[in-house]
Image (cartoon, rainbow over all chains, first blue to last red; front, top):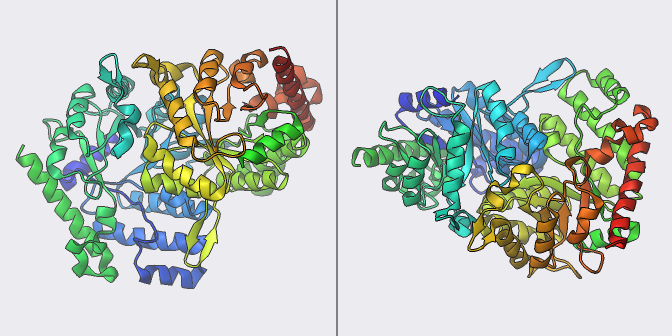
Length: 308
Length: 308
């Protein structure tokens, strides 16, 4: 799947992943009203609104982008109905040829981590039958529990030829509370990065590993170091746009081959129509605003890479 | 909810939480066959088997225990149907007066963490209506992302009078890879423990905080230190039984008041009938075996506390 992701990136010339993180305040009124008219102001109504909203964005952008990253929390908060919308979104994106990164940040130990890996990347046996429960292509994983938490994911990745992105240095302001603390002269995130390289060494795609890393765009200097610590890990970079990361900050996350990083933008794309820059599209044409925002983001990154 | 949990513990004289972590290999054949006969070898069939299995255990033990801890991964691996069984289990346990600790180990940042908190502990607005999606009483939370990840959970906890258990020192063999690394002379888990005390200081129940901690029974010496670092945090202690923790190891997790810790056992209780010690019950009477295992665990802990 890492090979397919890279192929998609080359094809679209856009190392971009669109974060499908819908919230009610992003969804245009006309979509909400139609959904509530059909299902009432219920969890099912909300889930229908989310799904229709996502579908609009996917239809308007899928030919420009290699991948999407639905954030499961935004669906989980609508309970079972929300998770049905999550699953519909995953399936639809895959139909459209997109790579789906499930932003699930799961992490546990042993058989429990294995169950999460099965839930999101693998297959489960029921009697003589086999099912793929959520069936994303990649999942994000939390490393706090150590190798016992990561290896069950890697085992499933090997079987399914899928991948994970391990949280190394997250984009948020307080990420340094633990991640930046110095251990034997180096910050914790570097030790985690080193483990990512180690975990990934025995499950390589053609040029990059099945085991990638999450490093926030908001910390470009740390990204520069981590790029060297884990040269074969694809870096999923959140924090571009709304969180403050700029194109110029991103160059250090890429390798010399122009690959090695994929940059996420969520509300900057999916709620573009609510920004002054794209307000002319209007809520009715929110998906066209998203398309334009993808094009602008692609340009911003391409220019930054050309100028490095 | 911390007050209710303590009240339940005092009433039952059992600082015990039963981990409802069903896997197909724990579920007796007669339950699986009945479920598959009704729904086929499908995810729905598996979910029905899980639910019937859980119900048997809950009915046989609810009067002896204060709380249960369903591990959501074991349900999530059966997709939407599995999560429906999770929700049914949560609701049924609450009906029976049990405190429900959702072992979800979620953790993200800002509005995403808030969404997880809403999903598991809070309420979501849809138009003019309000819904409680999964509605557990407590949730386990991963601290790797720092305060930005924890505070949204605490805000929801304050509103709902619910609580969280933050992963501090986990029970697994590789937990030391990052958690034991020394920072300014003290291991990372102590720094996390100190933060737990800080986060919990402004959301106190009558005697303990809404913010608790997870510390594995397999590391009693570390438990001893952490008990002092966070005196007002209830400690959820996994790793008893199957993972190797013994009653005598547990005394350091408790405060002088005999409170402050609640010990989890999962397969040691729910799959007791598969152990030599309880084999005489047979698969048909698996729930009676679970009841006996709870009684034995209660005695083991009571004796250890009496002898300290």
